[in-house]
Length: 377
Ligand code: SF4
Image (cartoon, rainbow, N blue to C red; front, side, top):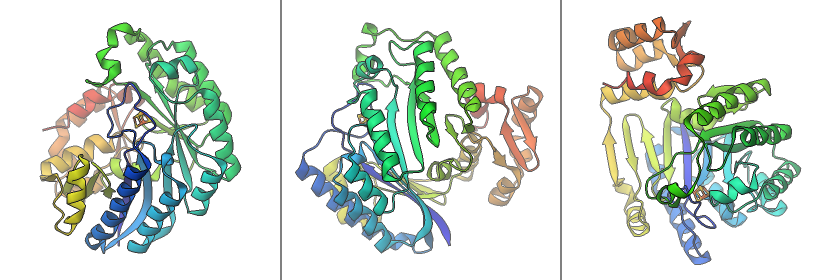
């Protein structure tokens, strides 16, 4: 049986963060309820396409999935189990924002089979949080984290952000210190990207952003600090204690099969990728006729596109890409297709080989975008 990862998109948030361009918005109880009903139908209807798959991970993301009543989360998971074979050891993650979970909710998550919690903290500095429009304080985070541990969560991810307005290298270091002191199993650390159209972008001239040098310093500090604190960088922006790399996200980087359910969710099986409609009314209509799998954007990837993705997604992982797997997937050697850039990057000390694997060196990670670009045709 082929392996499948399931992503469930919950497009609701208490209010919009100032930097956010994800598909999410505040919603009332009725809207949430009818959305969950649509999701349940989509999950069931789509199952006919995945008869030869076994689910190895489920990820409830958003948005703020923890805004849903626990009973709705349970209904979604039950529906998945009813319609798909789910592996007994499947990794099941829910994203939550500090302040949106209670002891009771967390208890329901655990009894419903959720075994991984991903907490969107971003910073432990309240002024930094307020500047980017987060709904919570550091204290809310500490309380939610404590409740999660008490409920029995033994696998917690904390999301962090660098290059925030008004953030200094010192305040970022304090965030790293405070978070690692709690010893979560996993930490994701990204730099803020100013997305066009967001309030932060529109009003960018009224904020003071870290300079390029400071941004760079924070980036270098992340790797150094977290590795010294016992985390392994298994992907460019993701760090985990031994055995806690995120199984779900690895599927994206390794181009495994995934099914996305909900508004705007993407799916990919084999060489076909498609995306659900982003507008509620179109999504509802799509669910009605989902037997035909008429998603918004269906893309059949060419062999060339698959090779490109194999390289630039796989090279994000510390282990790198498997030279022999490339040959068996595409019927050509990696050497034949990418011999030139590989030789050049090896000579520059940006790529290295270890057995059948080809991976970025630490220097290569620092300029990964340049390396990735060379693998696009
Ligand atoms: S919580 Fe996340 S998804 Fe919701 S508005 Fe903030 S950044 Fe966007």
